[in-house]
Length: 56
Image 1: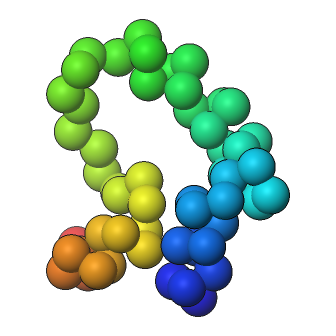
Image 2: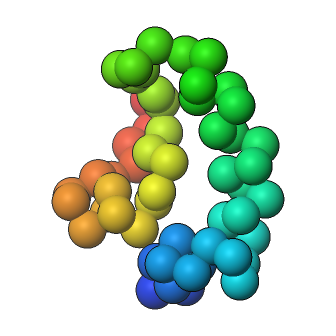
């Protein structure tokens, strides 16, 4: 699964990432430069760095 997510992020014009970024970028521009988020934006990259979703 993460392989497909990684591939989508590497080629955003050919996948769903283009529409996703089209929605998110204007919101991100209005926020502060550093913003804490609850869940990672790029799940494949977060998992490769050791992120694990935890209950509670």
